[in-house]
Image 1 (spheres, rainbow, N blue to C red):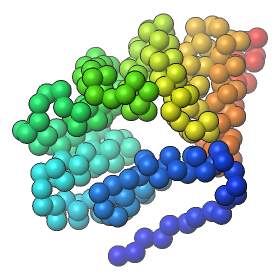
Image 2 (image 1 turned 45 degrees about the vertical axis):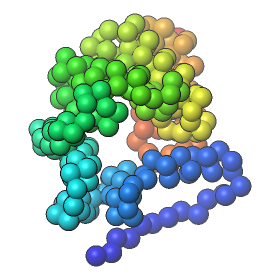
Image 3 (image 1 turned 60 degrees about the vertical axis):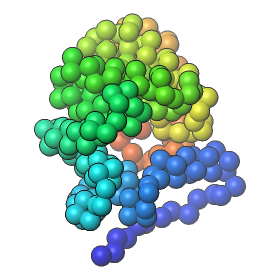
Length: 249
């Protein structure tokens, strides 16, 4: 079976674009070309093809470690499709395999705890989301360097739950921890950096601090306009937020 991938020629002399491209290459790394293909399919939203590929890889998996990884990826796929109960089942299968051979604070457990937390957050079950996010965060703080991007994601996730619960001061604390790491560890046009600026801007907006909100939202927009296609809905969303904030000033 063949898959067609459409590529767009860009300016290779742009150092920010080069940094972003290298970062994306790191994010779609895998043990084999097929695993890398699966990650890339997930990243660009080709879910049916990704599921077909992962099911084939699962049928041919020879180790528990490989099966645990594939179940995790299938959980991620179902989460992105909005099929949350199925996502939890796949993640729990991955977790069950890992916990048979690993101690409770092993670094390999953290991504699955984090992923289960994300599903519960998407379902609006915030107490459960916090429980799993905090399990993951405890492991990350013990096992990762203080400026690691995964730790930034963990802080951002916890901030997101508090944000959804309306606990804006706590949300801001975690969002700022995440931003501090991302400003150090990521290229200046990385979409995750835009997400951090956007999240902080929206918290300030909800708190009625509109000048601060505008500053962060404009930073987010600037990055998104450089790193995303002009038709990407995320750009329109942040532009709408900026317009709403300006009306309050």
